Image (cartoon, rainbow, N blue to C red):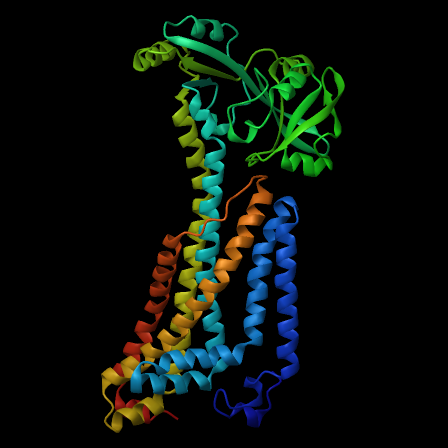
Length: 461
């Protein structure tokens, strides 16, 4: 609305409204650097779920920096288009006439590729880390629980005599109990996990020593997940007070462990202590180990026959696979959203090129009247798309790799786990596929330019 009437009559890209002032450019550069620096700080600080904000902040900062570099980016797009010969030279001229619109479309493609590379890789790393943390469950041959293991069975309690029946089955070498329940600690809800012998067979708890197990059995200490330690402001060696139905109990934090806390933070106690303090006799999980040389199929059939129909029975391997599948299902939603972003990039590219064709109808008509072939005009529009798409993809791969690292660190803080940074070459393939889908948006404008009637195009006012 600030554009003067005379200036509004000038072609796109010629008026002063299409040029960015140096002050605005340098301000955008400073703001972008500040946002990226803030994103790094937020990712590195252990802020829990708030750490995820580093992802959006880093992508936003990258866009602001790219705004400051509008000129070089548009020139790069034109240079890429110019590599395709005479049609590319004409396409480059068109690109330089509408820098802001070209920049906006490059950013749309860049964000789509960045999202695919960064979040796709980070999600894969998270699923891998979560699955690895529960691999220890596979060491137990069979689990019996009121609900599936991936649902973290907190109740109801199993029948009181079920453990004895299972222990008496021929071929059963050992039977262990565990119990899970929710409780309030501090200002939030935590999941209590009580195990015989002090600890569960999960990778996160393998580091608990025999001495610490003995102290847990004596009611002197507990093991907590990182998010619980963060919320309570405690560390290893600190003391916390557990409010229980049997009164308050002061215990020491023996170990702070990484644990996949998708539902709630975790507090691990000795099973007998949990039963006494929280007045919950019994168990919600029974683990069974087969005796050496036992017929696994026969023992499994006997276990199923001894367990009531409404109670869930699964092997240790099935439990690990089910937990992994649950985590993958959670990330499937974000994957679908990523491809929606790619679809938006396709529509944006179609819109930009269609506007370019409509604005140049008279120019294209004159070219056709001078003898330019339909194929030449078709290739001209496609070179514009190639310049925009390839430049956006290059920026997306570069920025996506950096955001992938930040996203991995941030997700690790969000789910209270250690997630390894593992770039996957497969995601580069996904990025190429996403670029191909985005370039599909160039086909309708290119066909329109090639099929435009000469007389009608020249007659445009």
